[in-house]
Image 1 (spheres, helix red, strand yellow):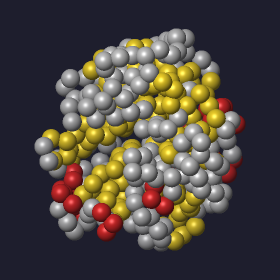
Image 2 (cartoon, rainbow, N blue to C red):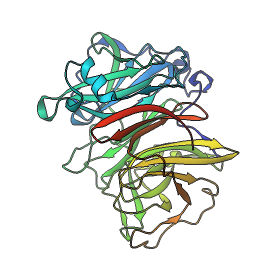
Image 3 (tube, rainbow, N blue to C red):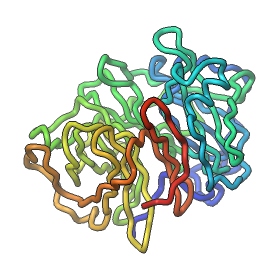
Amino acid sequence: MFTRLRYFAALAALSFTTVAVAEDATSSLKKGTPEIKSAGALAFGPDGVLFVADAPNTTVYALATGDAKGSDTKSLKVEKIDAAIGSLLGTTGADIIINDMKVNPASGNVYLSVMRGKGPDALPAIVKVGADNKVTELSLKDIPFASVKLTNAMNSQRYSAITSMAFLKGELYVAGFTKEEWESNLRAIPFPFSESATKGAGVKIYHAAHSKSESTAPIQTFMAYDIAGQTHLLASYTCTPLVKFPVADVKKLDKIQGTTVAELGNQNRPLDIIAYSKDGKDYALIANSSRGIMKVALAGVDKIEEITTPVRNGGTAGLKYDKIAELTGVTQLDKLSSDKAVILKKTGSETTLEAIPLP
């Protein structure tokens, strides 16, 4: 059985790569006010440390949330979450853009990165939803933090410099878009941060729906797994290949070729991916822009034949999946516990945050 590595029921049980991180992940953070221009992709590290991607500044911030005490959040439900956030920030729900959502494994509380307003005058905020279903703001004034600059990262009209992040064993894995020859990029950034991150590895994949190898489109969302005893990143791209990369290659090579293990249909953008076990079997749950929620069976991902030939007319290949018809309008999801997830579900102009049973 494959071991899900991206989230943990208790981060204290992890064996981190350095004693310093295991003892106190916040010890390297210094009090101040981070100059975050845009709050985008999120990831959690140990001791409630929250990583926030600021793509316009090509920078990642590590924030000490001070939120490391467990709470019972299994009954979360906040209807009109956008309106609740708007009210908290002194505006309306129509003025709020939610960019990402993650569960803090140390507490079970849910964090969202949002922008108040639109265009160049929009302001970032981080908000939290706890067991009482109340929405509160994480103050960024005089908060212990650190930052790291992604010196070769690049924003374009189509792609963000930082698309997705995950923390694993003392390192923050960051996917995005760069100035390098292979523009799609994965990098492993040790935490505590140094002044700048390594340039990472350029990544290339075979995209069956496009009938060619590609290195120009970034990963949209990913998670970490042990596959046959070796840690991999399982990544999903637009139109919608699912690809595995050995973590060891990400850390040591300048360029890596991923192994395409599924083609899940074109004209679609994956939004979030999580993993879980049910009835002794492992699955990936993927939220998508136009193809709903997919429950992908992970059995055989270690031995499945690599996809190297075209898949046309919106067809699928590789790992098998079921579509969860009752879950519609899901824009974000994350694992809350061994049997529950948290979703953001959009209905018309309104968004609901809700804990649901894993299908």
